[in-house]
Image (cartoon, rainbow, N blue to C red; front, side, top):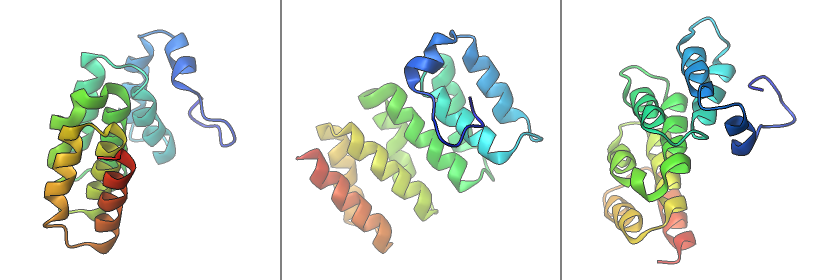
Length: 147
C-alpha cells in the first residue's frame, strides 16, 4: 500500500486494516533500509489513526533533530489531518522553524484547520516572515480560511 504510484490508500482503507497497523507504520518509518518514499508514506498514513500513539509518533518525527525537512513537513501535515484543531498547539511552533519548507507546511496545516486560533497564529507569523514563498502560503492560508 505504501509503494503504489497511481493510487494512494484512503484513511478508511488504512483504518480497515485495524489499529495495530499504526505499529507497522512506525516500524517502517524506523527502518532505515526502507526506501525514503516508503518511510515518508508511513508518516502520511499514520494520520489515519488519530490516537495518542499516533500523536506521539508524529510529534517525535517532526521534532527529531537532523530529520529531513520533508519528513518534518509531512509529520506536521499529518498532525493536522489526524487531529484538526487539537493539533494547533503542536503545529504552531513550527511556524518559527529555520527551514522554509517546514514553515510552509505548518502554514498549510493551520490554514486547513482554519479555526480562529489557527488563523491568529498565521497572522502573527505573517508580520515577521521573511521568506517570500512562505509569506505567500501564509497569506493564501488566511484567505482560504475566510477569517
